[in-house]
Image (cartoon, rainbow, N blue to C red; front, side, top):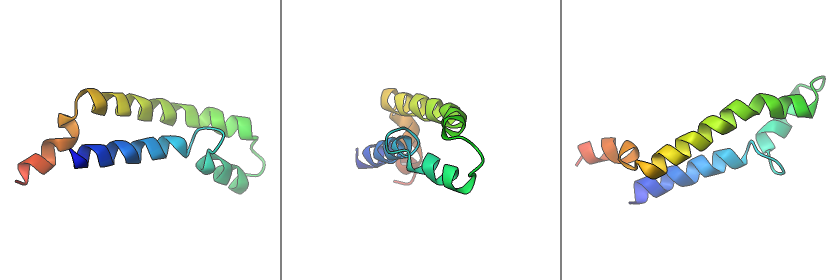
Length: 74
């Protein structure tokens, strides 16, 4: 299903923006909060990373979560 695949791709891209070595969101945050060490910012991002991983696993196991609303529109 194209909708499911698109949602999974977006979630994976968002996971990539908070994990090293790319972690662009974390580096932008470090640039704004210059007095906070980078390690502290990465530690603060861990709960969001874990939540997105769990979400990706759930959406992979149960694709009906993603396709429920589009299926109602048909």
